[in-house]
Amino acid sequence: MKKTLLKKDNYKNIATYLVVIVAFVIMQTLSNQGKLGSAVTGYLVPVCCYIVLAVSLNLLVGVCGELSLGHAGFMGVGAFSGVVLATLLKDTVPSPVLRLILAMVFGGLLAGIIGFVIGIPVLRLRGDYLAIVTLAFGEIMKNLIGNMYVGIDDSGFRFVLATAKPKLIGKGHKWILSGAMGITGIKRISTFAIGFGLVLFTLFVVLNIINSKEGRAIKAVRDNRIAAESVGINVTAFRMKAFVVSAFLAGMAGVLYGLNFSSLDAAQFNFNTSINILVFVVLGGMGNILGSVISATVLYILPEAMRGLNDYRMIIYAVVLILVMLFTWSPKVSEWNSVLVDKVKHMFVKQTKEAEVK
Image (cartoon, rainbow, N blue to C red; front, side, top):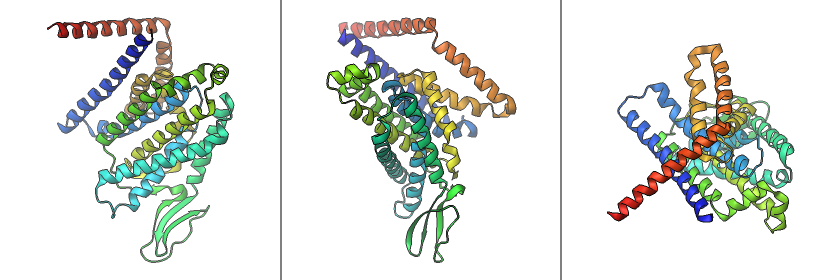
């Protein structure tokens, strides 16, 4: 029974990687041949960002069973810290790719550290209380970033928290982050290839956690907290691990997102962004990583592709969400999915046996 479950998980993991790799190869080939329009090309990096955000939140919400509404806060921390670092390293590190990777690591680590600090008091709560506190955290981070001023002048690096823009000293001064105005004039260095790499890294981290002993312990905590505690599972430690990993990946996605646009402001990382990411997770299926990948892709592109419809696009988007929810959670659809998975598995096993005979 255990071997059967492991094989089933392996098939799901392989299918997830294959879908992502095939999609990347197709889109990259079309892009290199110039067959993608500028609008579609512009969607590629943000789609990668939202896939990472959805998969990382699914680890916390779907696998761990903790409802968080502050994911946009970690994304914002990563975005602004990463853009500031990339700007400061512009002359020191001439390679855009290396600069982007360093910024992503820094933004992810900072978001992870903040997640750890926040998690110490927050993870004592559960259910609706945890959701409310994480929502408050996201709004606090948005307002803090909106009052931050980061710049360079003759005295060196400047970091100020103020409601009004302070003055810098010297001729060569400049503000990188200007409070509510955010950051402007960002040199765009994010690429689809790096985004694809981040998606693969996220899948590797999350799927390995899910299929490890820690992952099984996290699921045990989700299914029955009291029973998990009774067999010696450190509930707080495993919840903290899921929370910090989720924050770290969200921070990296934020850096990739921030360095894909020429301007950035704190209002982009508000409550609505957290809700959108949660919608991706719910519609893709709680704990279903491949579902998160597909839903994040479709539901990000859908409203963007319908911008020409003006007032009607959000109505159509809402109707599509309702239909997808009804379709996803239909028992008949689940039965069809099981039958399809069994057929694919049977074909794969049959081909393997035939190859061994030959």
